[in-house]
Amino acid sequence: MSTLHDRIFKEFFHRFLPDFVHIFFPEMAAQLNFATLTFVTQELMVNLPQRILRITDVVAEVETWSGDPQVIIVLVEVEANRPAPLPQRMFEYYGLLRLLLQKPIFPIAFLPLHKGGVGWRLYQEELFGRKLGCLHYGQVGLRDLLSPTYLASQNPVAAALAVLMDDPANAASQLKLSALQRVHTSQLTEGDKLYLIEVMETYLPTAMLPQAGD
Figure 1 (cartoon, rainbow, N blue to C red):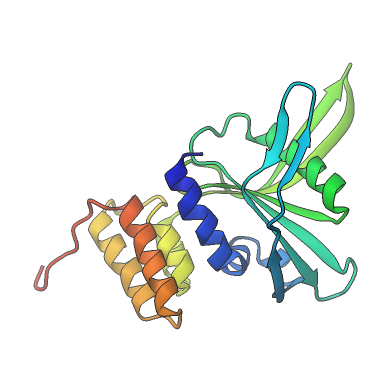
Figure 2: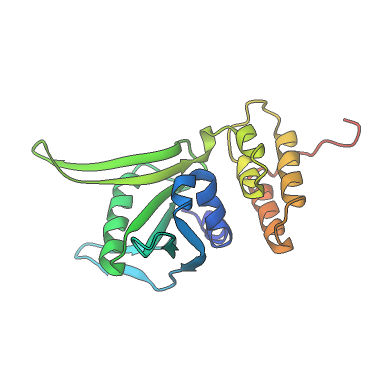
């Protein structure tokens, strides 16, 4: 992941992780008390003989409403540039977090610049035809999601992400204008609004807004 994407999406999830989970995994969001959300700031790594396994993306702790389990860990791995080895990496990160934090993990792979859709993915390891281990993890790949669906949700965070989605009308300027209007008229703080505008300007910079009377 490049420095630009790292900066943008780390801040995005620190500001909007609850919104993100509500938008893409509502059944999971309904189980979580996001008022208790805290981000894990300690360095999460294991020294292996051939390499160091380190988690550098987003790790957060949140209580559940039911209390069973009381607390879970949300892991978001942002992959903007090279999605090919992602499933194995999710498996490794899951194992590392489970070992270090000793809590249930909700793993999510976020692909802002690639296709993949929304859903659950399976990584599975086999030996001599026998299944030895597997991991189900959530995945959100924005490029093949339909932007009108998320603009229609009235959620300003969904609207901002819509500029990275598929635009069936191929009207980037109108998409950008609609997303900006959603953000501008929302109840977000001014700081959060400015941040989402920065995201849109970064990923849809050349779309000129329609002028009055167009």
